[in-house]
Length: 156
Ligand code: THU
Image (cartoon, rainbow, N blue to C red; front, side):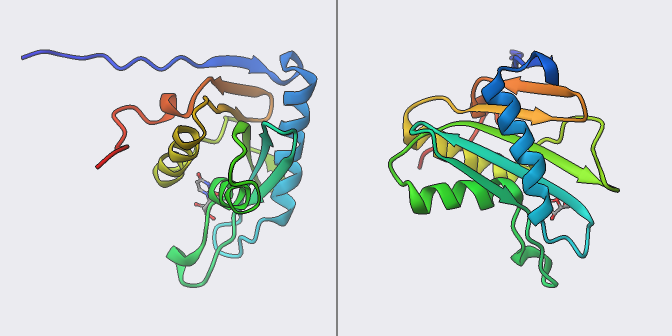
């Protein structure tokens, strides 16, 4: 029997330590939560993408009475990017969440389905996508979506 260790490197910043561009993206992710439609969970997730060409795209979760028909903030933004800029890489994604009117204390991590979807956007673009998971002050920074989804399913 062998054992393997999977190592994920996460840089932990406080908001003030971020670059101006990354601060702006985190701010936009928070702003994006205002467009969340969450009558069921009241948990508002917002994302902002910075594409390689400088374009910014926001996303917010959109729920539905038939629960599985809703979509997470991450996929709403990425599929928007794919539909409007099919050949432009996503350089950075910022993700945050607001609950009870406040940004959540701890950084909000994408669900498994969104990790899988984000990974394919990254693979398809041929360059790493930086991921910023923003809490009230703490921001986790991952250099690639691969760090969010070890042992991923990528080919068949
Ligand atoms: N949600 C997201 O938007 N992104 C995630 O990665 C996790 C969950 C949304 C889905 C639902 O509208 C609400 O958060 C509560 O699960």
